[in-house]
Length: 267
Image (cartoon, rainbow, N blue to C red; front, side, top):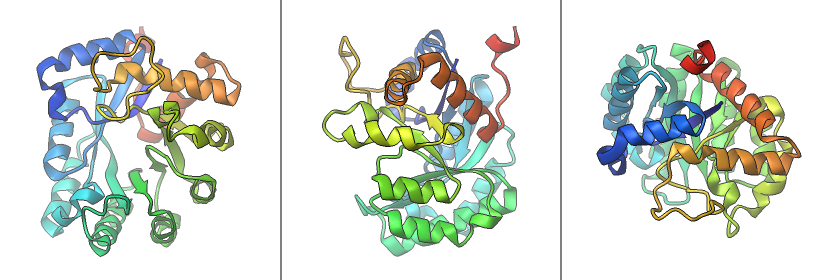
């Protein structure tokens, strides 16, 4: 039983075969998927999908790439979405100084507004950080005592960043980046340093397809069905079994997002 804590299932690449994507995920043992909300429109679509499909839940937020969307009105829209019990976390939000699509000051302001929303609702946060570690940690640390649970999703950083986030009592989300022999080698060692109760896994579909999949898929589109590959790699790195890591990460995700048992587990 696996739980994918971050899948961008509102992406238009899934429109033509959405039900098949969910079926393949189920057949691969992925019982729940959390659909990422990364813009106002995307968050509304994520909530709609979660309302329609029992195995789906959602987050609601504005990705730093879209930080200029953030306003009093858009935050109010997110607050409304978060009243839906299928919407489980505030985000995706945070800082991205790698692409710098939005001005950094705008990103920081948007991040702080999301933090305030998380404090008001008491919900956990689904966080994005890329090449922004010191500033990201500085912003977060000022509010940490009043926030609920946090996950730094799709962690790709170095040891200093990881240890900083663990010191801030964050959970860590690991994706197929760890399966990338070109740029994910450092994670093969670092993943062993994540306490078992803080570790979760995700696909970030349709992005970051694990490069270790054999035979190699004909398409570059990632899907939740490939979460098992991430889990296998994490298990190998940690000297654990696939079942152990699947159980541990799923228990963490269920607790973090307040998810119910899957229909398969209830039967």
